[in-house]
Length: 124
Image (cartoon, rainbow, N blue to C red):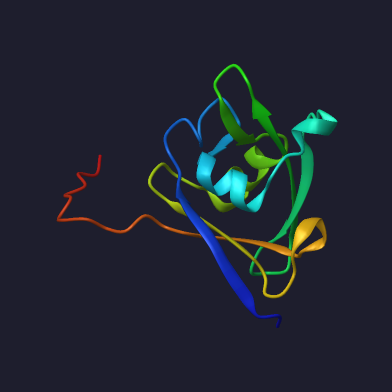
């Protein structure tokens, strides 16, 4: 196993797992870890991530001027469905230690939202 460097976590919001089929990447993380080259007017990148099972996921990543946000779009909804992600769950991004630039191996991990307090679920 390659050593991994933790990049950032993102708590997914209802809209991240909703009908919009997109994940918003917080701006400070996006610019630090997934910089888009505005000078070449990139309309986005395809980023390859590996999950803990070794399965590959490819997400389209771009900047939306309209909402001034960095987003993962195409491919994201498949990940949500496969992992059955829910609002409040945490997605974690990592990369191979020592790799830099576009060739670094990227990893995606996720975990259920932390259980807070005592929620009583009434069945039926």
